[in-house]
Length: 215
Image (cartoon, rainbow, N blue to C red; front, side, top):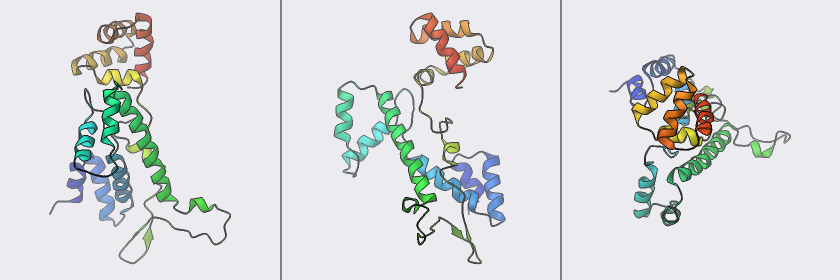
């Protein structure tokens, strides 16, 4: 039988992260693993930002063609046919999804929050797991920890245009620009950026300096 540590590694956790959660589980402290799995589940359906073509588009088309509910694939196709940039569309969809999963996490944390805190007989309902003795244990705040598990590493923040452009560059060029930014060789990085993306050199200089703060 597969160990919890091995399975967590298969899900993408580092060895140390997986072992830390597994060690806590061995001590019958399942709260960290439960929190992580819940948050990972929320993030798992947020659209990807793959370059040069996000994978979610084909996935949504396939779901739509199979009569899966909720997916408006004709509207998606109309947007693409109208010339909407696929990466702009991805960024808008992702922003909406991140806002949604944040609100879901907050709702799980406080399902009766809409009743207000001044209602004397409001139910105090909280997500928890029950141990072998029947004692409940809360997994910790989900919405407070949600940003930390952003697969993009941006804590839920939208992707800037320069970060998106950088992600579309060849890997070798990305590494070259990163090395120059690490050395604060702004002019050389700006020249490379201009060759790759075009534009005014002065604007390219401002762009790479902004990019350096995001990488």
